[in-house]
Length: 217
Image (tube, rainbow, N blue to C red; front, side, top):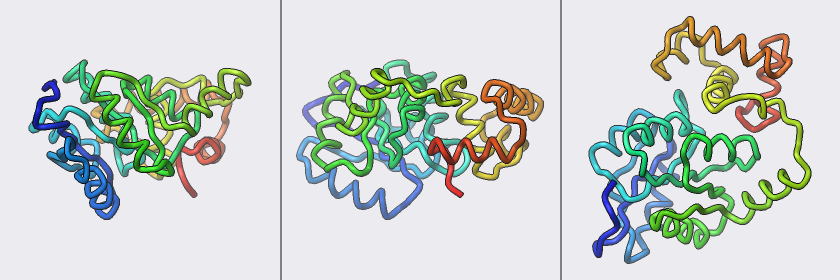
């Protein structure tokens, strides 16, 4: 991982919506010490852009078609254990936040936050610190005080990713291709997810994913 230099903080911006990327690129590049060196619209392109540009900070949405930002985080951190990744998402559910940090994220900011919070978080992550927007910090604080018994708490990051893709309508074959797994492995995960969550049917799994913010109907 390249260190931050006098040229400023180099940023890879990852979001599947071009208009969103364009808007936040303008916000970030108004900072004299920020440079957006690359953009990506999915997990695979994010990994390739990271390899090509070695940015100081990756600003990553986690809700994208196909493999999500969670998978991209995992792959980037497998390549560079020091990679600094800030999740920037519309979701703030405790299960998703914990999954992001579990995958290797350094921070988590919601898209409902003020631009100043995003900018401050990028600077913190670039320094090697952890960062969260105020709403995410409140969610985790409440979770620690009054733990919710979400069925997702029984799942690992890979299982959450497979559930998210399944609930979004992907077939087992598509999930296998997205995650570089065999179809048999995805089938085994599917069985384990049902067993761990206590869901008996695929419809119940989809409803669980929607209730936990992993998917939309």
